[in-house]
Image (tube, rainbow, N blue to C red; front, side, top):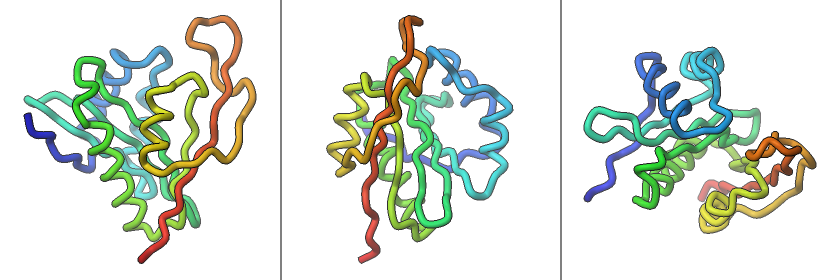
Length: 154
């Protein structure tokens, strides 16, 4: 099966993104935040559709010198098919298009699959935010790892 291409989402995709968040996340992003991101020229949501359904998306923001990956989400039924890598390529291309010096992100310290993906993409750990996220089991808090990757323009 060929991997579909990631494309920039517009306001018409809001319901699709909200639904993907709802079915895939323990703490889904809410519609007003996603609507704001879809309308902001300094934020892009990049999505992958298959058979008319949004199955993956990434949210990247433009900062003064850097870009930040705000989120990357693949529907549970579509995982392990290379979609995260396709989104990472699109995110990196968008960040380079903005002439960003680095790509930043934060990730739950316990999200081993995501950390492996980011390390494969050359991200290094810059620090840790203690007790940043609510824990997925509802018993306390979880650290966030701060990671970055340089995007030197060659």
